View 1 (tube, rainbow, N blue to C red):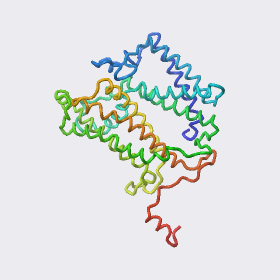
View 2: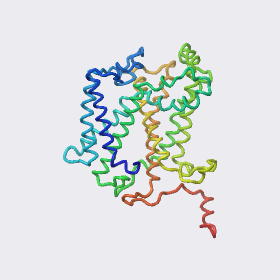
View 3: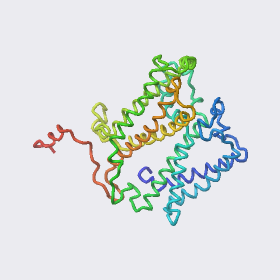
View 4: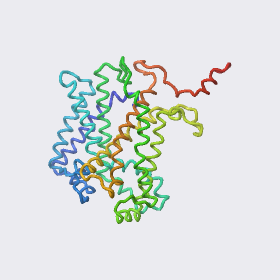
Length: 372
């Protein structure tokens, strides 16, 4: 199914969109479980306006329900038309415009930081918390709430809409539906890949430094009472663990331009010397880029509304740079994918996958007599 995703992604997107539209109809007529705005207890408990944290922070089922139902019906029709390669008249550009608008709205527009929290803290809850004495402070029920899981599902649906748009473009532009190659296969992404990778490496380090500082006892000027409360409940330890994951991810990002990102290194017993499957790097990198970008836009709104002071900058300013991090990581991942995609099994375009660049020593060794 992974190799033929372009054939079924539009129909899968249509099915999800129609089902969510039915939920909108259900909420319109008083159904329970509305996960946005007034139905989001976590947001309504905030002292500040919920709209600052989420664009649907003040949504009601009476207003949002009919909109969701209508968009669900229209979106299902659009996704089916795109899956069938329909591109006549104005619909040639109207269909992809609708798809990309929905994709950005679902994956970034209606999101906040909680989707990233669910994904990032799940391994911490599973592996780290039980061995650090924090199990009593952090519960699975606090992490996996209905509004948070709803945002995660919507984000994945946004990715599906983006893939639907990509598959439709390939289908109507004459390119290969499987690999997307056309007669002209050069792209600015290929040239920007290395620079984007280094930007993606450095961008999260300011955030990591502030979280490590809090865990080590440096408040960095934030409200002393708030800092003490965070120490009592282990908040800064959890933040340091999350920052450590971010730093490890930054290091792994360098694999997109390094030899060990294409061939498993020697210390990986059982895998050393074997080819790294490209999707093993591309899929996580793309998903992380979407997650951190969706979270970053919330912090951009907060900073734009509240500004930055000496006592608040560590809380919100480092996350603003996640916009740069997300964009750079996405470009780096796509450049890596394009470099390693190899020959297409459908159209035959592209030569054999280029291996990692040989070092001068390896080049000399390969030229010795008797070497095969």
